[in-house]
Amino acid sequence: MKASKGSPLLEKVKKRGDLYAAACPSRGVLEHVTSQWGVLVLVALHEEGTHRFSELRRKVGGVSEKMLAQTLQALEQDGFVLREAHPVIPPHVDYSLTPLGQEVAVHVESLTTWIEDNLPRVLGARARAPARKKAS
Image (tube, rainbow, N blue to C red):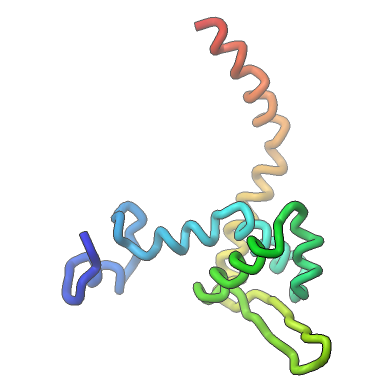
């Protein structure tokens, strides 16, 4: 169902998103916030505050310039990241979290903390998984 003017979906979205509805824009937000690079950018900016592009790229190991730029652009469009360009030579651009970005980063960071704290348990489960396949 498409969210056309006056549609029930559009009226519902105005009040609260519905992740289960295929056409709900909340799915795009979820994708941006929970993508591998989105999570890492949000957590880096939450933990350490304002960063320049090159600082973020070094902090978020493995991200390409293209993917970092796309991630920052998506998070900026969603209202989570503030991009501040300074009129100097060479160009200087700072990235920080907006108040909305701070809110979502707290939730994302709690997930990353849980993952890091429970990584031994997860790795143990992974190690046991092939043994279960062979037994069945």
